[in-house]
Amino acid sequence: MPDRNSRLLRMAAARADFLEYGHQGAAGVPDVLAASWVRSQRAGVDITRPPTDFRDDIDTRSRLVRCAEPVLDQLGNDTTDLPLVIALTDSQARLVQRRDSSSAVGRLLDRVDFAPGYNYAEAKKGTNGVGTVLEAGQAVSVVGPEHFTEELQAFACTGAPVFDPLTGRIEGILDISTLADAWSPLVHTLVKSAAKDIARNLLLDRNQAQQALFETYLRADARSTRQAVFAFANSVFMANAAAQAMFDPVEQLAVREHATFLMARRDRVSETMAFSSGRIIRIRGTRIVSGSDTAGIVVIAEAVTGEASQPRPPAPGPEFDDRVLPRVATAGAATRGLVGDLRRPHVPIASGSSPAWIRACSELRDALAAKAPTIVLGETGTGKFTLLAELFHADHPCGRSVAVDASQLHSGAETDLDALLGSTREQTLCIVRNIDQASTDGVERIDKLFTTLGSTTAPVTFAATVSDSSLDSDLPFHSLLGHFEVAVTIPPLRCRTEDLTLIVSRVLEEIAPGRRVRLSPAAARTVAQYTWPRNVSQLREALTHALRTRPVGEIQDQDLPNYCQTRSHKILTRIEAAERDAIIAALRDKGGNRVAAATHLGMSRSSLYRKLRSYGISA
Image (cartoon, rainbow, N blue to C red):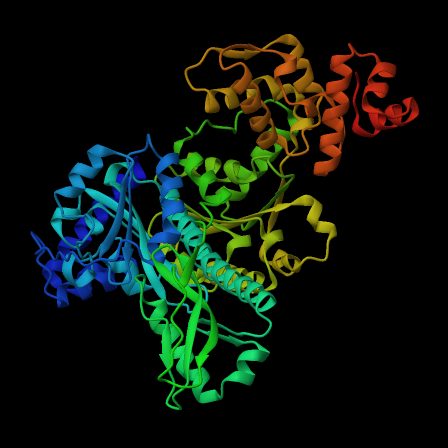
């Protein structure tokens, strides 16, 4: 791509100037990158062949690895045909896991020691998508000549920190590496989303362990009303009434210390202990095991005898059971959707012949040409964001577009966006998506961003997308409307009847490239008659559903989802949608006989007729 090649050439020239002239030679380089070059140079990193640093004592069964594995597994399954390598490091930048979606890229990375056990800290390997992320504390993409060392310049690596949601500490780095010419800006968003999935799993893992500890304690207390029951974890101490009556605070502390010792052991240990008073107790209980860690322990303590010389022999069999917790969640829907976007070929959408669409495209082109801050309105799935980016890059083939989802803004979002924009020289479009979904805190951050972009001398234009239905609400985004000069409304799919044939062909080309597939006349009429509340995104879902039934050939009317047989103008709840689908299925089974369908459904004919009108079912 011309814009990518131009940028990489500028970065290569800037790196050469930096190596020759120092920091002043890095003019125009993003601050995060320039600061990393400086740190790498000061650390004495060899630019031709940095030494390797390997250690075999990495913890491959740590809590981080345990919580990351479901996400890594899902990413690996979703990217099997993409030229990527997925890696996880610990908080010291040492690789602990690597998943190769591409064996070819994996073999190339083997040559630069990008493998478990090797250290990719910035002081060892220079600027890269692991060590630089650890130093900067934010997601970073390092592409081609942006790497400090020559051996890494064939690659593009994007890393994001995995934060512990409770402590705020960086537990590790998630990195996706590929070849420099195969990198896409979507990888940056994908890595950040997957890192958030792992962070969520860290929280779920801790909550799951605490809940299991509490439940086990309650069950033990209910079964042992006269026995002392304790529960211990890193930040948890519980004791029932019997325990508080039987043991003074010093003895309770002694029980806790011995239980802490038992938590760290997975083999049999002594389960009797003696107090300084001479009293001996026997303890038994349940460890709460999460992965390879003991997350907590529930202890039942009972006196053996009042005299140390007459101990009661312990009961045979294991004194401690283990309650092993299941694995936590997997990659979220947002992450999986991004993987799908990486794979999906982009088919231009600007072409169309309906008057409303032509007018919207014309207004949007004029606004972008004038570099006017623009707000783009429309229903969900009308293509607001896609059309914005497409028209911008049509006029600026060497330009850059940066997207931020307002609903996902967090405390580090501004810094992260600054890193993406950098000290840009090319024309740049910054799009804030779904500003109506921003929280109050998010609106404040967007307001500061728009204020900054409005006063910058850099060639940056900003735009935002919003659902037109939210304009009548009292959501906090209304305070942002003063930043915009132009508003453009994208028409919904039901107002683009003339373009339906083209749109269907385009969507089929996206989801079934190279296949001979088309709509039958009956299916085309059904598509034309349905109102598509979620527009093109819903049309894509419906055609994907049909292709599961008929992967090639002529898609028939019955291959489409049941809701396509209705003309309801509202988005139904899950219960309403299930009822609608049941009615359509009954009508099909009974050959359109409404009386028979009503009997089959167990409802009166009047109720059926009322629901037919409500759901817009024409059968």
